[in-house]
Structures are given as C-alpha cells and as structure tokens.
Length: 362
Image (cartoon, rainbow, N blue to C red):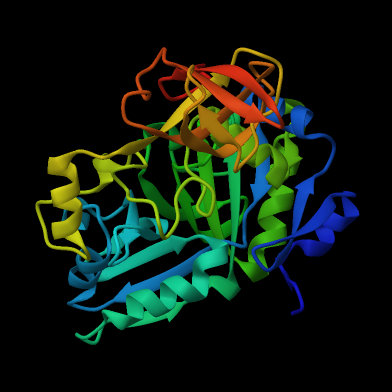
C-alpha cells in the first residue's frame, strides 16, 4: 500500500528530515537528533507536523447524544470553545481509541483521533449513529501543527491578535494566526511542555508553517520529529495508543478513571462500573531505572522473588533525567510509588522504582 503524504511532505524533505512510515503516512521522525529536539521543546520551542491525525465533524441535534453514547467522558460538560480528552470503550472492556472532543457550537463537534485508527474509529462511531447525525471525515483536508515549549506562547502571540495568555488549558478559538484566517487554535498538546495545536486547511498549511518559523527565529524555534514526540510524552506519562492502551486494556487499568464518567450511559459502562467497584488486578504505572539499561516494550517485569508481575508497554532513555524510564502494567500490590521492581533485560534483572506520574517534573 502506498504511503500517504502530509501536505508539507516536500518541506520536511527539504529540511533533510529522516522520513519513516508511520500509521500509513510518510512522516518526519527527526531533523537533527532526538535528544536535541527533545531539549528544544522542554527548554525553548519546537514545532511538530502531526497532520496524520484524524478529524471527524459531527453535526445535528443528536450529535451530543452520539458522542455521549460512544465516549467515556461526559461531553455534556463542554461549552463552545472547550475541548475534552476521552476514549472510545469497546464492548469487551478495552479501548477502541483515545481522542479529543471539541465543541465548536451547539450541535457541532470535532473529534480528533489517532492516525492509525481513523478507519476503525469511523466505522465504530458510525455503527452507533442510528439518529441521523451528519458525520464528515475531514482528515484528508486538514493539517495540524503542535507548537510546544515554554516559549510557544511568546512565539504564537507574535503572529495573532488574539490574547493567547487568556486561553486556559483545553480551550480553543477560531481566529487568524500567521496571516491565515479560520485556524483552530487549541491550548493543548502531547508534550507536557505547554503550547498550542493549530488546525489549518491543507492549502494554507505552508503559509502558516513559514510564518511560525519566521516569527520564532530569534527564539531558536526548531522542527521536531516523532522520535522526540515519543520521549516527551513518555516523560509525562501520557499514553500512546497501541503501546500503553489498546483493545485489551481497560481505561481503569490504564489510570484513565478520570475520563470514565458513570453519570451517563455509554458503551460497556456496566462492566466498567463493576470493574471499578471490584478493583482492578493490574495498573499502568511509570518507573525509573535504578540501573543502566533501556526498558523496551514487551519486556517482562519481575518482583524481588523473580515472580512475573507485569510487562513494559513503553520505554526509552529520558533526555532530561538521563536514565531509563518506562510505563508498564503491573499487578496489584506492586504499584505504589516507591515500590522496587525488576525489568528483565535479556537474562539480567535490572532494578527500577515505581514513580508517581509525571516521571519528569519541571
């Protein structure tokens, strides 16, 4: 199958980005080095092209009802200009995908889903659309840039008249930025470093990209690839679909009880409620290596007596801590912060300490 290309594919290639296949797209994994790009975001400002993400528009008098039916969070709490993190539970206790829900206006919402799950999510949501909600998949026509880091506010403010300092986390507005009209400016991100995500039509994407980089020259703005995106989210303990959450993991096991609201009826709510009352048998936790080694996805986690107690779902070296860090599911009884666990790296057992998330605290 031929790889899809984001609107700025040629721009990334001209910047000598290393391009790799990711979720069916040809995507920039790095422009310089993962560590350099990671630190640019933590300490300054960087820009990710994440235009591979999927966007669905839902419109009509029953749009909210459909969203309430398929998502775990309570979308009735949203107001115009407010976004919400949520997930799509399946019927077996797992997760179809995690997503963002944007309330654009009464009877008008945008759902932002993971690139690898666009078709799967579309089919899943459509299967519950029995009340004639107008659904439109606008993914192919949209680009998405994440401007992230402590200097992101200063950079973005230079190219828009809207007072971005007044935008709370998880709010958004449609406005002109970088000379481009009708950009959805969202105070969200996947790095824990603060900043904005900008949803723009493909035909205006290059103009906006150039405006961002022109305005941020003296701030040291850098393009950032998927490699640093992964280590940044891992330091903050943010889940990656396909690694830390999937069709077999419960939102309660994944520490997503805060987006699982039993004040309404949704897919598999009864079973998840029963699981909450009974207590989960395993939990997703973060850990920091005490010994030198990189915890990789799929590695077994042991207790001090060499009993298997879990598995690593994501792992890497933290550029900010200069230590191995990871996320993994661990059996109840070993999940408290401060617990000693051992990661099976080949035939060795390397000590790690369970830590409260985030693993890197600014």
